[in-house]
Length: 239
Image 1: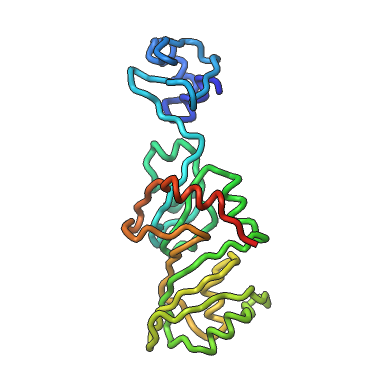
Image 2: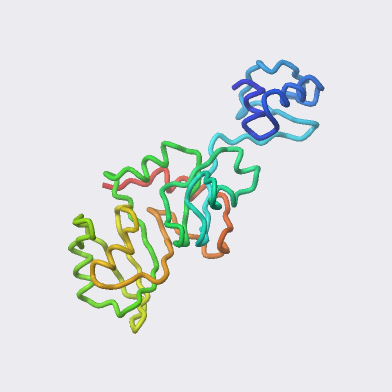
């Protein structure tokens, strides 16, 4: 990778600004001052420093966010705040994007990365990656609902969903449930409950494939995935 591109990609300025840094002698590669912007470096195996500080280079970034309601699952929007806006600048420079979408008013687990191959594997419809949601429903959820979801319900546009696994966590006038589905249709969880005459009052995603929401994350907080979590995602195979 060209040295000026490396520095620019990591947020150390525009190409023009980076060239000025290089001319000033502030950049070293393996303790040798380099002023040539076109010089190629291997950031994984060579040490690049700026004013004596080692530049940490990562090809990919993997973040878990506990998405708050009111924020869009998008990279940018002219009017509203996005999940990328919640990231520190040091993380934004990797140009990550949310893997899939959570509705604006839905909370919970959101994977944010710049690893396009991994994202494709997790989002490809034929992969049927399960996603589990916790929800509060405005009525009592019944055994009939469990059976209906297991068979697949007909949405308002006539689409019949693939089977969903519905569990009643707490029953009553307002029921707490967990629902696992393998699709990602627009507003799917809400529409599935509408199909059985009920309404979702609160919705949070708690898992995606092998990745579980870190419940210690406050709404709007995020952290890097652990090496173990990254390996689980990369090795995850579904039919």
